[in-house]
Length: 165
Image 1 (cartoon, rainbow, N blue to C red):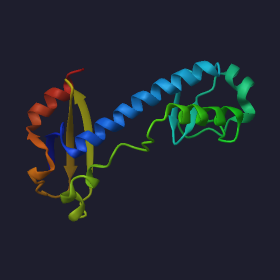
Image 2 (image 1 turned 135 degrees about the vertical axis):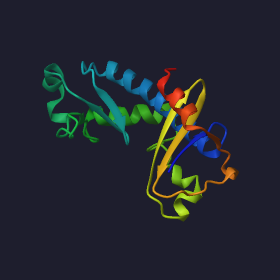
Image 3 (image 1 turned 60 degrees about the vertical axis):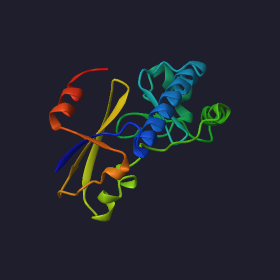
Image 4 (image 1 turned 60 degrees about the horizontal axis):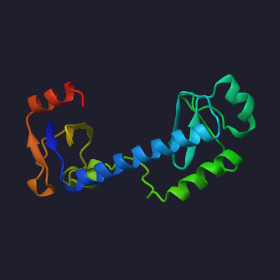
């Protein structure tokens, strides 16, 4: 079962929009922090109040003792108790952002998916100022309209997915 929805304006759509807005603000903070600590790494990121980089040889020379072991994707986090780790946490506290861990799970907002214990996957795209959701499940669960979702056709979703915003 594949279903497609316009989620803009729904409770779930608002939660998703808030998460992506938070993520954009965090990206700005991470870029600012990368510049402050003079890291040359092109690949960097943030997660769970930690700052990650894929260190260049210059970065390794400067911060070797402050970095954790590499993750599976090659990124290395700064240790939380290192000067750099503490500085990142301090910068986050100064920004006063409400902390969002991960993108909101669709099943937490659409009870019909949870009620049946259904295995499902979902995908969100953002086009023309609106959020769209694709849900793939194992059964043909009826998703009630009370969630504020507007169902769209597969062809509409495909056209949206192929365009760039």
